[in-house]
Length: 496
Image 1 (tube, rainbow, N blue to C red):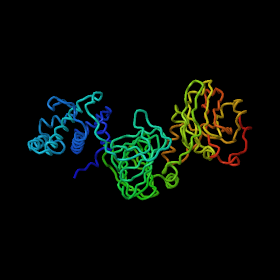
Image 2 (image 1 turned 90 degrees about the vertical axis):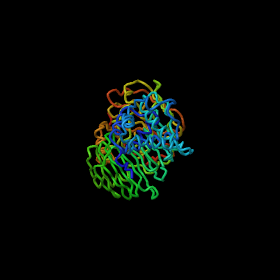
Image 3 (image 1 turned 90 degrees about the horizontal axis):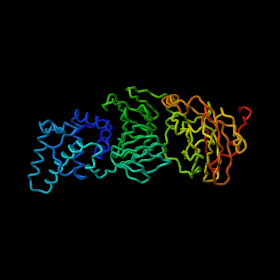
Image 4 (image 1 turned 135 degrees about the vertical axis):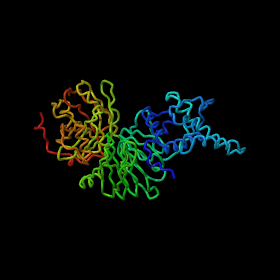
């Protein structure tokens, strides 16, 4: 029986990228080394290319094995010496194909052509530079999943941009910059992926999560669903669980219900440790092979709070376009919450509550603008288009004197919001299983203005050089808490 459990999790995506002519050079080098050293990888490789020969068009006409000098030298060398390829001597593979070819039956002709064409394709593809692999035509897609929902998704440039109802094929990779996407796999597993995230589909019941966050609900029919990260392979034993992979590839696992089997992987994808987690437990697996139990208090909070297990209900947009007088268009983000990115050009700057309080309730889940912080010293207006009646909020750095237009057109709510500027602080909070960041580097006052009709609000220039750019948020009037909930003691006397 073939044992492919020891193959690296990226093996299948590498083959798919090689087939499509999109494989990166560093991935090509790793794949080459693996095929040189691993007989099971070579067996799987040849099977894969034989399937490609059946379903796709052949390599360029006139290409001959003897004329090629493939970058994967093991195949050419094996053909010349009889060395083992795909688990048996290459001469036997070719001889068997020739024997089948000599039989005057249609099926034999098909089989022989598959063997011959697959070997030709393997050698021709690997010999061809990446930029000139037009001879390799992508094979018919094997559908393994479907997009069954999305919410405020922003996809990476140049990659897939699937929409609801779209089929997803084996080997396809999703680069989700922000927002949420729900994917239902062929055997019934439903996952919700939260951006930023990178997810590769490796089967109708398996995926590779290189970074990001997902929750998985696995029905009985899909028992055995697998999620692989750079440092661990997680196999469902009838459960619901969540996974977080950070930029260092450290992997946190939270089990909501049931059990999962966790296998710790070394850099070559080999299993070095096995464990089992049950409901209510959580672990962190590091790239150094360390396994850390996350404390029980954090588990209780995080298992319910850190993951989106069902897509948020769709809301009607409140903010339309946001432009500066210099012609720049700002990004509008849904769902302001703890840890939300504050600026598009400052990944370490995140919104948070003022200790010991969370973000004010009236701002939680609001739409907000993520401007460029480099614009803080630019004398320019900002035009905000509201698509419906709303309360417009301005979040303003307390280190700057409040401008006249803000005093005259807006009302100080008396509430504040915090900003953390330290990536290390944020990362430590996530690693320690906290739902909120500790400490605040900066404090922003929150001003509000009721806008009873859709339209464009123009905000005058402010010189905020040396501090942080102000931003705006909005909540539809029919979704806003009562004024009684919003009112708090005024703190204007505390302002500079």
